Amino acid sequence: MVVTSHGRLERTGKLTGLWFPEAARTFASCRGLGVEPRVVSIQGGRVPLDPACSISMDGRAGSHPYADLSLLLEHTESVADVSAADCDLLYLASGHGAMVDFVADDHIARLIREVTQAGRPVAAVGHGVAGLLATRNGERPVVASRKITSFSTSEERLVHMADNLPYSLPDALARAGARYRPAPVPFLPYVVRDGMIVTGANPSSASRVLRTAWQLVPTS
Image (tube, rainbow, N blue to C red):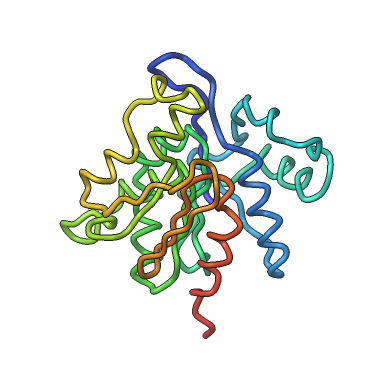
């Protein structure tokens, strides 16, 4: 699981970071599959959490696996230290910070490219889909001609974030040639698979994205 290291949106100074509840659900789902996920961030070290996460924690911050993930996020490895050989499945977690550092990091682009070329699945949820923008297969963006979803413009407006963002993720995906598909109903689970790339529109999609992508992991 790759998470953001970016904690502030420069356009307005609004604090941001990883959307913890989505990452925690994914972490728990991995354990439910009998897998202990490796969590890395763009820069390594402590991961900033979006302050708005406290609204959505449902009182579970002190329970497992939430507490386990919280501890891991205090001291993460850098994505620069990960190779495709380390990944059965690559998961790009959500959070507005990913719109900044996922698209600017050469190591995440390398890793996505190597994992897809190795025939293994790449999964991304919400703003984590921004990581796909930095990746090219030859001269073509990896999203070109693929069906892709992400956190939508309408969802950004509903959470009052549209004016804080450095760009529109749906528009950027469309410019890169993606066949963009927004969630039909804001905030409800919506998953799109195109080949070995599985994307989810929003945090509520996380568990379904992981289960869908896990079915694509080669068995040998």
